[in-house]
Each structure stands twice: as C-alpha cells, then as structure tokens.
Image 1 (cartoon, one colour):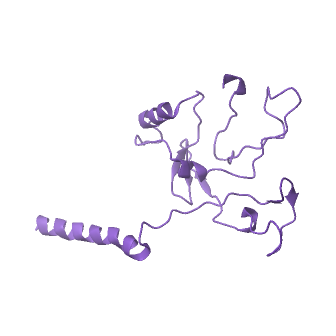
Image 2 (spheres, one colour; image 1 turned 30 degrees about the horizontal axis):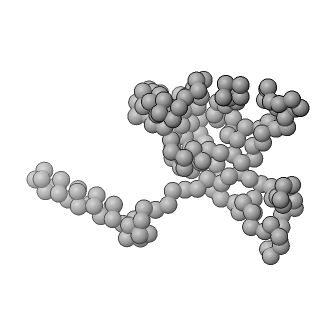
Image 3 (cartoon, one colour; image 1 turned 90 degrees about the vertical axis):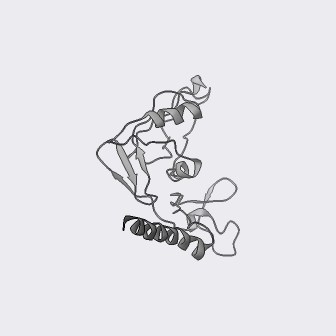
Length: 168
C-alpha cells in the first residue's frame, strides 16, 4: 500500500516538474521587479518623456513593471512580496570577501531559520532602487557621504550604511 502511494506521489511530482518544461520549454521565468527608474535621459541630462519614434524613446522609465513590495516580518527579516525571497534587514559591519560573506550567511541563524545563503546577482539586483543617487561630491574628494545622496535600496525596510572609502 505504502509503495503504491509512494509510486503515485513520485509520478505526480514528475508530472508537476514536467508541466513548466512542456509549456515554456524551460522553467518559467522569475518575476522581474521594476527598477523604480522614473526619469528619461538624453546623453546625460533628464528630459521629458520621449514620444514613440523620437530620439531616446523606449527608456526604462517608460515601462512599468511589477512594483517592489516588501513586508517587514518583525523578526529582523523582510519578505520580498514579488520574488518571494526572505532577506535579513541588517547589514554586516565588516568588510567581507565573497567567500567570507557566503560563510557568514551559511553560519547565520535568524528568525528561526538556519538555512541562509548568500544571494546570487539576479536576486541582489531585485533589491536595487534605481531612483537612488550618489550625491554631489565636494571639492577635494569624498571624505564623507554627500548630503544629497539617496541609497539605492528601500531604507524603510533594510538597514543601510555607506562603506568607508578610505578602507578600500
């Protein structure tokens, strides 16, 4: 009886895994989060939204994608409601290599979970808010963060701090 149920279950799983391949020829695409970019540009300056056929038509700001949406879980984590990914709200104050960051994630226990991992580039990209600006540097270089800076991440949900440029 159990073998028969297990066999049926495995067949059902095989069918469930095969459906996306049959429909799309590959796994279904991951949701793409809109960049938040809402300005159009010419070679370097913001411009009015170009009409179809005009120079600079077809920029990111002219296409609305799935808007970013997050839920603060109240336990040090945030859930991305578009991608379904769960993120730590906190940043690590240390400068880490990629391998060190992977190890920190692997060793982390947060919100009752111990299966954390470092995100891949595509997953990180889903957090970028392209309305951010680096700010205007004062003469003599950048010894502190310009007052006109806006982070490229939603600071309502995620902790953020600028790195120390002097540290490399």
